[in-house]
Image (cartoon, rainbow, N blue to C red; front, side, top):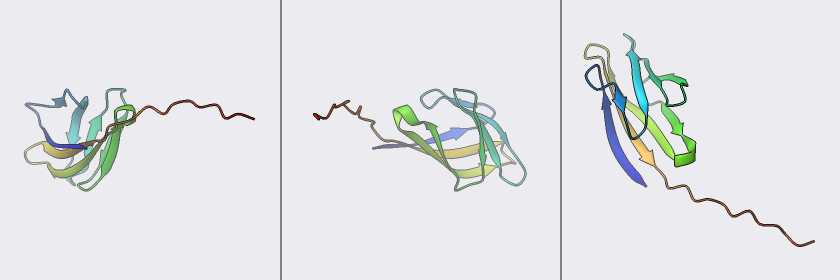
Length: 90
């Protein structure tokens, strides 16, 4: 498993590896992001999101600052292994 922090704000709204974009940080710390597929996700600090299931990418919103217009996420990437398609004999 790989773990890294992602800080998004007005100067750096996109994280290329995870392909998420910061849309907004509201006064109550509700944070809105957009995934590569265009899906909008929202939550407050502590919320967890799956941003790319096929690559095992999950993020958690650690901190949101409406004053700074930024959000800090932790990304956990779990390697996904393809499952062999097996036919059972009858």
